[in-house]
Amino acid sequence: KQEVTQIPAALSVPEGENLVLNCSFTDSAIYNLQWFRQDPGKGLTSLLLIQSSQREQTSGRLNASLDKSSGRSTLYIAASQPGDSATYLCAVASSNTGKLIFGQGTTLQVKP
Amino acid sequence: GAGVSQSPSNKVTEKGKDVELRCDPISGHTALYWYRQSLGQGLEFLIYFQGNSAPDKSGLPSDRFSAERTGGSVSTLTIQRTQQEDSAVYLCASSLVTTTGELFFGEGSRLTVL
Image (cartoon, rainbow over all chains, first blue to last red):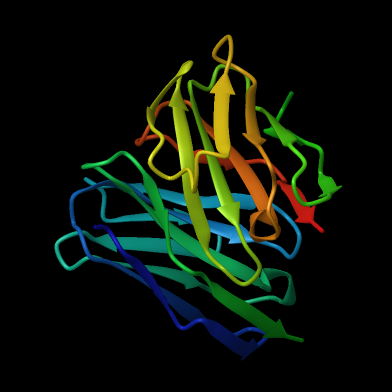
């Protein structure tokens, strides 16, 4: 059974810092891994999608890496801003079941 | 529409009543997913559709929950005889293709069972 874990559960940093969010998964048989952002009371917004054959994806100040063999992904946020404050979730699409399994999320607060 | 649309955005109901939640996916998206997010919890998979068929219903919590999708577009999630533990945000997402495609979420339907 695929399990997705995100560490840390919460993170508070001063504005301008670079930071890394971690995601690990137990079953390496995946189609892809996706990072989402969720603002309070809102739905999820897709940030980056990494296919199983890829090692990383970049969008603006965000960079996501994937190491399928070790079951890990990281989301790197450069030069953090208060507007980055949100909950970040990773999800893996299991190639055995087709389901997208989510981690519990990391709640990020960037202080001005 | 431009994004995934869900209605109602908020629903308050009494225990024992039936509720229907609607999801209108992005036009052309063949895959549609329902998730549930309880307060302080992660996202719980409920069901997904590929076209009008539902290959995997294993996530539905009980037989009080059912979902259908007609015309390969709009989906309805029905909860019969609601219980207080059904209170949650129900999120719908769609994807151009199953499993390999990027998922786009609606804003969710917040259900409160009194």
